[in-house]
Amino acid sequence: MTINQIECFVEVAKERNISKAARNLFITQQAASNQIKMLEKELGFPVLIRKNKGVSLTKEGEILFETWAEMQEKFRISVDKARDYHKGRSMHIHVGLEDMGKCSEEIMSAFSEYEKTYTDLYIDFEIMSPKQMITQFEAGTLDLAILYESEFENLPQLKSIPLHDKMLKVCIYMSGNHPLVQSGKTALDDIKDEPIGVLRKDYSLDFEKKINRFFEINHVRPPRMYREYASRRELEIGLIAGRCVTVVYETMFDDENSKLFSREVAAGSESSRIAIFWKERDMDTKARALGNILREKLRRCY
Image: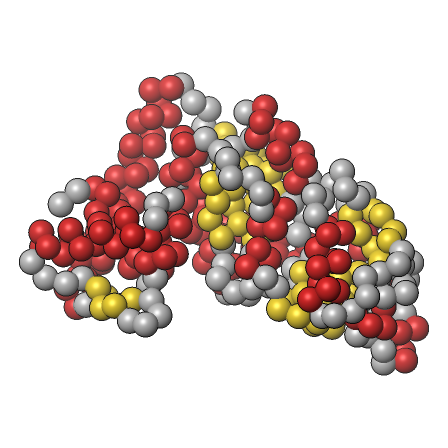
């Protein structure tokens, strides 16, 4: 049996889905299926139970997974450390983080847990716009980026792993004191003539486009007026002050303090997930290790 077969089995066992595992390993679903079949042929017994949706482990598969998951992770990390040493690579990992508001606490907690697990590495994170991330990836000064998948939809040169399976909700946000809240009119059709707060195009690559898409999906005429803001925090202040309303993913603002009112209007699309992105192959192991911790943190919330 080969390292690739073991790696594929461990990823499928984690995801309970061959297609998702293949995506995480950057191979085709057919290639992943073939790896599992060759492994089962060499072992002489099945490790997976195939179902209409996803897979489960046989008892034999459970026994192997219990040992192989830890073994395979240690193998990855040891190779990664040796490569870093050989290349004289810095132990600092530069991470770009989009300001996503509500889930920031979970992300910071994941960074701390990562550093405790991998004590020779240190995460140097920076809040930045998706456009800044692209510039730094191109310049070779950014290692990882964490943001909404929709911002990087058309960048095939970047690798990515989604950090949760559930699609984020799309919500209308406005001041808790907004006249629309008082009148009980808070549907998309009610806000189409209101100033819609958006992040500037030099910050977000597709904020305004996403809002238009939300209106189109719900068969409501697109908004007439947009009011641009330079950051998520500035947009939040504009909302609290009643200068605009907006339509965004549920993670953007924390409405628990009653300053903001929110109402769900739709489920997000496939690209509404938060994901970790990277460019260089040297980052594969670090991105997956951090991604595993982030996935567990975000699954508890969304």
